[in-house]
Amino acid sequence: MDEPLTILVAARDEEAVIGRTVATLRKAFPEAEVIVADDGSRDHTADAAERAGAIALRLPRRGKGQALSAAERAAPPGRLLLCDADLDGDLAGLVNGGGDLTVAAFAERVGGGFGITKRVARDLIEVLGGVPTREPLSGQRSLSSAARAACFPVAAGFGCEVRMTIDAARARLELREVELPLRHRPTGRDARGFLHRARQLRDAVYACGPLGVNFRGLRLPLVGWKVGVTNGPAVAAIAALGLADDLWSGQERGFRAHLRGGRTTGVLKLLGIPAVGLFATRRLSGALLVGLAANALNQLDTRPGRALKAYLVAALALDAPVGIAVLLLPYDLREMAMLGDAGSNALGGLVGLKSVERFTGRGRWVAIGALAGLTFLGERTSIGAWIERTPGVSWFDRLGRT
Image (cartoon, rainbow, N blue to C red; front, side, top):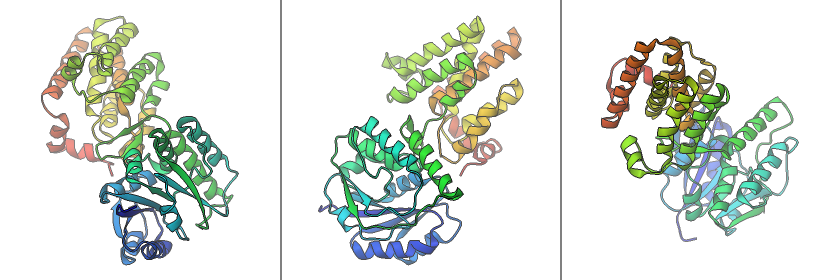
C-alpha cells in the first residue's frame, strides 16, 4: 500500500458530470494523479476534466478498453484505480479492500436490463478463469502492480473488465469483490439501454477470444478468421494456419528467422499454405501464387487498414469477393479490431487462388516473379517505411485511419 496510486477514468461525452467525478476523486485521494482518457468526445469533456484538476488525454474514438490502455501507458509505475466517469460515491473501501484485483459491487442495483449480458460475462469468467463473480462488468477496480502487469493492455471496448478478471485469475492473483454504496447513471429498458448492453455482450465475447497487440500497444480482438468462414474450404484452411501463428507464434519474423527457429508456426505456414494452394489448384504455379500472395498481404499488415486496402485493389482487378473486406475495413482502420495472420494470410491466399483463375500460364509466372521480388524486398528492407515516404501511396495508406 506504499506504492503510488494513479486513477484512470475513461470518458466519452461526459462534460456534465466529469468535473464532479474528478473533484470527488481528488478529494478522496489527494496524493493520487487522475488521468481522464477522453475517448473521442463530441463535447468538452477533456476541458471540464482539466478544470477539475485531472490530466486529460484527447484520444480518437476507439473504445473504453483502448482508452484505458492509453491512459495506463501514460501513468507512472504503481497501483491503479479504475473509475467510470459518471460514478457517485466513495471508493476508499475499494483501494483498502486488499487483494491484487479488487472489484466494487454496488450495494443497490438501479436500472439495467434482464441480466443476460451479466450472466454471460459471469459464465465466461468462470469457464476461462475458474472463479465465480458477482459483478463481472463493474468498472470500479483497484489493481496492484502485479495485477497491472498481468492485465494491461486490457481488451478492447466494453470487454475490458471481463478479460481483466480472467487474466488476473490465470496469473493466480488474489481477486476480491467489495460491496460499496455507489451510484452511477443507470441504463433503462429502452432502445438506448438495450443497444449499450448488446455492445457489452459483443465486446465481452470478443474479449474472451483470440487477441493481439497492435503497433500502438492496444490489445484488440483478432477477427480475420471470418475471412476463412465465408470463402470456401481452401481459404478456411489458410486462415486456420494463420490463426495458429496468431495464437502460438514466437518472436521470429521473416523466412530466415523461422527457418533458423525450426519447429515454429511460421514454418508450418511456410509449408502448409503452398500445400493448400497445390491441393486446391493442382498446379505448381497455384501453390507458389497462393503461398507468395499470402505472405505479401501478411507483410503489409503492419498498420491499420493497409492489408485490407491492398486486398481491395487486387480484388477489383481479379474479380475477387470484397464483402468481408469492406465490412472489416472500418474496424481495422479505427483500431477496434485486427486482421492478424489469420485474416491477412487468408486474404492473400484468396488473391492467389483468383490469380490462378484469371491469368494464363505466362501471366501466372509473371505474378509469381513480382510476388517473389516483393518477398525478397521485405526480407531486406521495410516495405512499410517505403510506403510511408512515397507521395500518393502514403496518402492512400493513411486514408480513413484515425
